[in-house]
Image 1 (cartoon, rainbow, N blue to C red):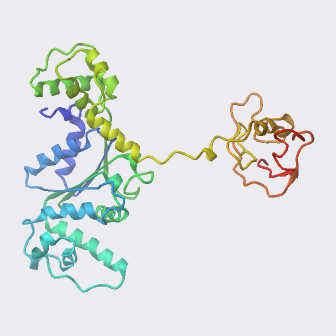
Image 2 (spheres, rainbow, N blue to C red):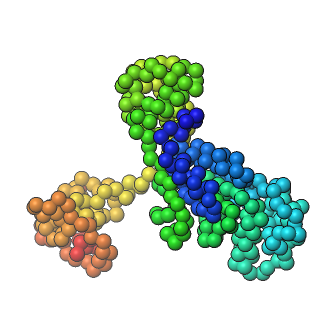
Image 3 (cartoon, rainbow, N blue to C red):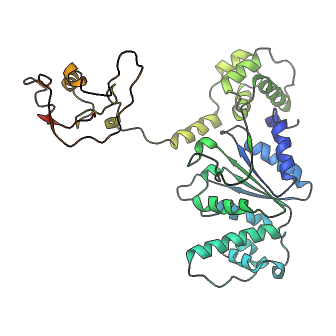
Length: 368
């Protein structure tokens, strides 16, 4: 295979090519970052382009306020010069004139405005469907569906419910970055899913040999332990394999992998991933006591005296969530705290010293 990034993807490539060649089709390519989704899709679609199918490519971007329908509108711009005369188009496609100024001269007049926003949205969806139908044989590719806004997802659901007869849709996404669990377009939509898994050690070795050959360093001469060490360092992610092989240059010894630093593009990708993580939890939301109940205090972390008072047998004995002998854990109580004051157990709370004021004479029961 000429492209080193497609080593080990013969089966997935064949499935995708077969689906694209027999529209209508909806294919989802799933995989983590750097696994090779884009390389696979572009190779399959590129080969389908030889049969006269037009490529319509759109990308979802990690914007704070994504453009409504932006990826699909971006893809439709590639229809310039491929549409029949305006008089032969469905009149509803004129609703796209404002969204596609590049195609304004090729579209029918704008329909009369609608006062109902829902009806206007439905007409826009019908216009996109009508334009894709008029485009003839085409492949619509939307990359990074996990970043799609709600409007784009709704539009794609509308298209996949009854896709145009000569259209193949290919959508890529990362499952771990989806906004909600489950299929990205919902369980009620029929589509083909192609999951991409990491490469094994053998494929990593073949990919490294192909990369070195492409760099003019020759395909032979890799030490026997090199593929296994490279696989261990990169976890079989093609993007990481390519970056690490590029960083070590002509040194093919396994020790070179230990000396190589983290490639720049990998550092940037990691920083991007970390920037999207949620902020750290507040110290107030720290771990509860071992019994699964909340600390009966407004302070966190509680003082040493408070922890000592809470751990007294006369207090913990009344907690039904406390693990008993022979059990590994206890199920935390999910009941709301009782607002009925209850007296502290006799002898449970200090009457003098630094913890005399904690807890108060009456406390809220956090166990039931």
